Length: 166
Image (cartoon, rainbow, N blue to C red; front, side):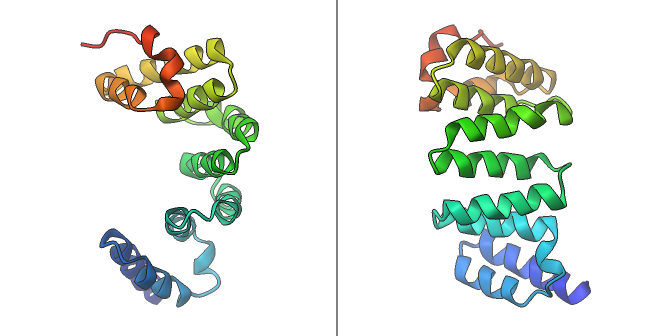
């Protein structure tokens, strides 16, 4: 896969430089086998998300979850795509079905709290946010999570109940 690897690295570099057009051109030169690699699918998802093409993002994320179900970002991308398509219940269901498949982290519970708030399920959202704080505290990131929560309008109904962080 060396030629494909070089093309992928070039595409990733173009994307990081803000040139999505060049990034896509590099990806178009990949072999059919390489186009199904999880790293390629993830980069394609990011490029497609930047264009707001959420149905295509959903399809890419589904492919990513099928090719690499052990990567939590595929599931997060799928849920976010569904959320952007107005399918908040499906976004919530997607993440809640896989949250225990991964080591404790704050990211999935954070998004579950967001989706639960959007669905008006505030008690459930609070429970997910508590779980996110526990995971963040284990890595010394609780204050960062608090700032992220305070910047997330979907979580505004929970702002008054946030734990104090030192």
